[in-house]
Length: 196
Image (cartoon, rainbow, N blue to C red):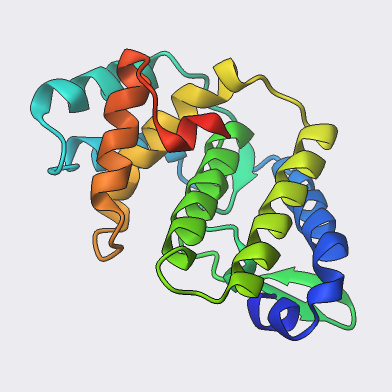
């Protein structure tokens, strides 16, 4: 989808909506065979070395109070893992598919979008930045229309997923941004990612 939309930017609104609808459909599927994401998140947070121990413990406490679930979660849902075919959209790369609360997966997509947009600010052409800002704006709007949740309910999952990503996504340059987001979100401070 990434390449397709960069070649066909006029399709961005339609495909952003379709992507949101596809993720909602995925979340509507209950599974019991896959491992619970909560356990993977717990282990990943314990290994999140860029955070001091007290902060990791605070995030683990936060995770302990969040509801799990049986919904299918992709854990890497974004345009690079969606193929545009003549039969519709196809999601690929299910290597870390799990079961959990849909908000965990949605928060992961939110985090990927933030890191994606931040990386584009470091030199991508303006038209590319505008394209992906538009995509993510429409995507989140449409997802919210189909499966609404307040920012207060989503924020704990965003904190948990951002912390776990410090173990999962070590090679991505936004470590400092993720650390500062977790610290700000835990203490109610301001952060650019909290304005979304």
